[in-house]
Length: 146
Image 1 (cartoon, rainbow, N blue to C red):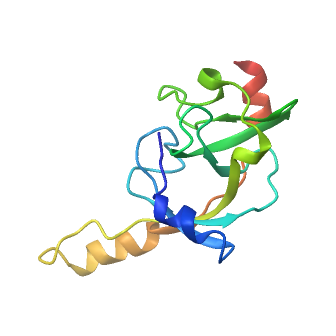
Image 2: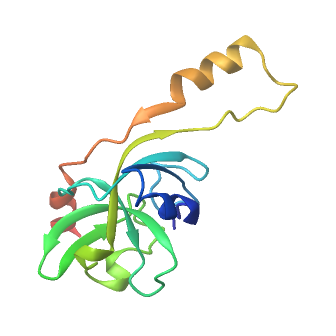
């Protein structure tokens, strides 16, 4: 499951924007292991948004999922990778108070070491490194199809 760093959680009370790092494959192809995220803590969430939540059964674990739909008792959240699991199909509706923030932007750290800085490698990384994380408004249709 993608898990943002705990340090970003501590800073959210001071600054509404924070950083997090993804671990795990559950949000592939939207987010990959090692991606860095810009999160707006306490943001208003709509269906289709990528959100940071506190795991319902492991309160010390933060995860990144897509808010699929609003249900009685909270949000139904899903990973973009249906084969990875670890979403509301496993633990049910996530209470509103466990939804901590909305992901706005992702960026990837440079994948090369000090000896691999060819112009082509730098250009390829620069083109794909930073992107906004857009809401997927078709998520409700996919939810009904499952």
